[in-house]
Amino acid sequence: MSFRYSARRLRPQGLAVLSSRAQPFVRAPTWQCRGVASTANAEKVLFPGALNSEFTSKLEFLQPSKSKDAISTYRCLNQYGEVIDKKMGADTTDGEALELYKNMVKLSVMDLLMFEAQRQGRLSFYMVSAGEEGIAIGSASALHPSDVIFTQYRESGVYLQRGFTLAQFMNQLFANSSDNGLGRNMPVHYGSKELNIHTISSTLATQIPHAAGAAYALKLQNQGIVGRIGAPASSTDTKEVERVAVCFFGEGAASEGDFHAALNIAATREVPCIFICRNNGYAISTPTSDQYRGDGIASRGAGYGISTLRVDGNDIFAVRHAVKRARELALQDGGRPVLIEAMAYRVGHHSTSDDSFAYRARVEVEDWKRRDNPITRLRKWLEGRGVWDDAKEKELRSGTRKEVLKAFEEAEKAKKPSIKNAFTDVWENITEEQRAHMEEMNDILKRYPKEYDLEGYEGGAKGLEELLVKK
Ligand SMILES: Cc1ncc(C[n+]2csc(CCOP(=O)(O)OP(=O)(O)O)c2C)c(N)n1
Ligand SMILES: [Mg+2]
Image (tube, rainbow, N blue to C red; front, side, top):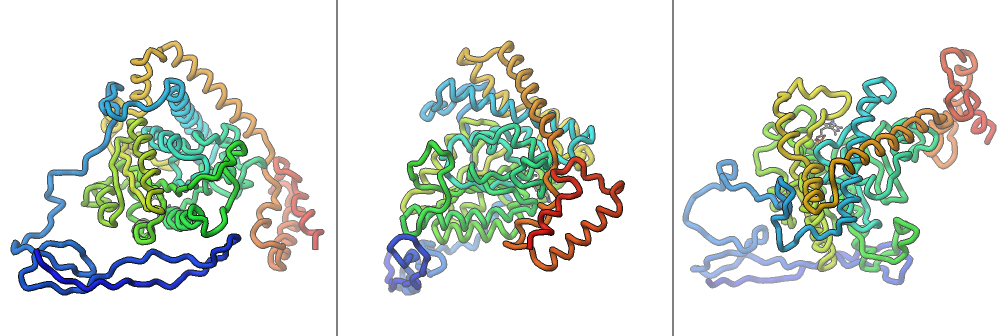
């Protein structure tokens, strides 16, 4: 092989960054741009847009849709709960595995009860994680508490594993006065500043570029170029660690333009972001066969030049190993993105507003329930270790049910937030327009008290008065 190329360094502009520390400039990475110049008998030409491409005289299109070789799926446990990756092993203590198991059971018990509560008309909306508990709980358990997380809406397990309490879940679901969001969001759109988890947004995929941007900020913080933003996640953990951003989304969300923009900018800026796609086979009623023709979402990671792994989402140990390794990779050499595609099956309906038997056969769901499940797989492993049995299972489930119902009843009884919260936290001070709206609303509430019963709201119908007197 012989070729000549000219190499010149592209020198990007210094980027001025506001910093509490001394360094005023961030130098973006430099990279080599090779000119096109080769000798007559070269085997490769280094086009600036595709380095290392060999010449071929075969006119042959890549035909991935005809390939029989799909990207493989990493597993640590088989369906019988036996460790098949002997090298990695379970890499956990029995006690730690028991905690993961209990959290998965807690999530599924909460899901069952909240789904029923919605059917009884006591909650307006709910979304279950059935079949995907291992992805959320397994990955959260492999991260550092101060890593910054962005979720979609089927990752309640991330919250649970990070320490979100049953009371916090219920306060949000009932939009009561103890809800972090003060009742301004739909049920299931949790958020927690203390736990470093950004508030969930209904608008699909918007969290993905947010995560890429946050990861860029973390890269600068990890390098000490800008000051650290935000307090550590837990008060006991004051040691500064390098942090990554972690972004969860479904395979349906990966059809949005935001996904592509986010992965590309994360790759080119080399930011420490772990993208975790839950591929559960459906985007509401749209099956994956109508969503894409490539090899899942993993093949797209490779397309963006991102380190990628496909993993069995029913295997919590495999998920933990994958995320732990992804975190190490993401922090290597100053930072880089990683994509994990966790395979699963959405066992439940999309949400309480959906009846999935309108577009998929009952038998398909029943088959999946029987065939594989992250909870039963870990249970088999625990039973194999001699630390779990039917009696313990029964006790755990009935105790958890009581705990959930207690939190549920307390949150249901609690007062709703004051109606003033519909106006606060929008502008720093109440604007003239807002004042006019409040006065009009106050007038209507006074004139039609029977129509607007605000007994259950903090401050009742007088909720606005405090704001109205404040000039
Ligand atoms: C921008 C946008 N388009 C459409 C919707 C409606 N929508 C809500 S959830 C959903 C399916 C998402 O599927 P996926 O990302 O696979 O997540 P899953 O529900 O399977 O967990 C759609 C289309 C939305 N919320 N936002
Ligand atoms: Mg999906």
